[in-house]
Length: 239
Ligand code: ADE
Image (tube, rainbow, N blue to C red; front, side, top):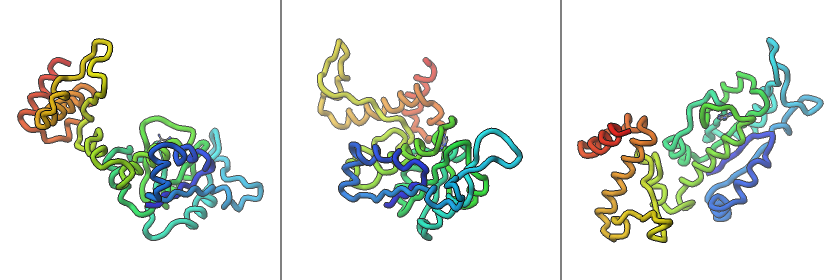
């Protein structure tokens, strides 16, 4: 997997590559990462990459030429080009999993007030990380890269991502570590029992309970067993 980020602020991505799990994965060459500053591609004589909007209005708009020339310089027939925009499809775990299987991802990060609408015609996918507006696409791009990179084989232990929230449609079950009692709060007995079947049953039930309490909307997409439906109904009744 190779990731290319087109951005006016490549330094945004340095901490991501210098820290923790992503740093170790980079050192093991589990992925390639490059940034391209599209300012270097501008043909505007003062080095500008943006201009005032036609029709008037506040702010500046990123121009087609520098971004699309930068894109042409890195795109291959096997690249998938993603534009970060609050108007895009909302990023979710399923999208992270699909994108983690791609050979080459190119992210276009807008900045300032927005970009020329015609840029959308040159991308494969438009993605938002939620219903809010950031100062630029870099923050969103970092979130998305993190979620994708941890799914690349070898980056984290396979079992760790199996039980992730959303991967089976449910939020993840609660986890505990030592000590068994902290300030009077005890770890559930079953987790100390060593009985694997009971632990698996308990965790599944807790995942259902947590999802019903915190994100009941997720349950609409699931085909629950009769037993699971009973658990969910009892939570929703007492909510
Ligand atoms: N750029 C600005 N806001 C954004 C958002 N919410 N998601 C993706 N890109 C953005």
